[in-house]
Image (cartoon, rainbow, N blue to C red; front, side, top):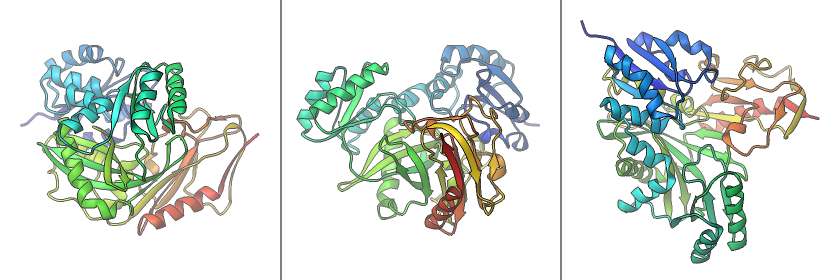
Length: 418
């Protein structure tokens, strides 16, 4: 009799581990107290606590368990835990995403360097450590640029600068936010799309492709799939995604790669060795069929095979995050003819936890979650974490129909601030 599979899961949210027991997989979750949903415990063999960004600390709690009964993989869906998971993977001698690949993807300057070494997706860029260096690079470009933290996430502290004066100002703002260096790169003009892929044994399978609506701070507040904008570029995007993943050394697991469709063709914006945020795995499942979260468990362990070819769309899907004005919530009103699938979260129900995709919406064609109550404070939409007021999620015959259903639901919910 073969032993059950066993994985260590570091940080993140519970969705990908929800079906682990049924698949014969024991999950040991490593997380920080108070930062995970208690319901995840029913899907886990056990939960142990450690700082999820501290590789040696996580290794210290996992190594004794590994020696008792070995882990088959160390996995994460968490951006902050990526390098830590790679460190533990390397230390235990397991297959998967190692620390070098995780670090290359986390550090945007290292990603650009890897692309340059392989002659991929040319984008003029420079790491700058002072306002003067940033100004000098902008003058050499003679064009707008973007400044962002080399290891940033969730669209935080991204600044577009039109000239040297704005560039210096942007760098000073980043310094005030605690950053000592930034990646300066030419501004890429065009819509942003993403490609969701899964890799196994070095073979990369592009699965879904999505497009975004963003605000002036580059925060993505709406996503739809399959992307109509990506369609004319699909062969090139699929090829570029595979070459990008080869360049950074990724051989296994999910990846979320973002591109700008410039007049010169697709250019890499960034990539990640994880599932996409903003419910993208659910959108991809609805529109294309494959379940990326399930694949994280089944494909690496040989329970299921990686499909031979990218799937064709079977429909469309979209998510739209509510964007009330910043301020203190005075009232929340849901129209009487709004679909009965709307769920209202109680005060404090998800305090300290990123607003997740709720499981009860998974099988509904259209659903919505309202996460604000009177007295709550609505933040300015400066980062993805600020998309916390709720959302509408929908399927449709195509992306346009799904978007329309999300908009209709949004218009029947009013979160008023005082």
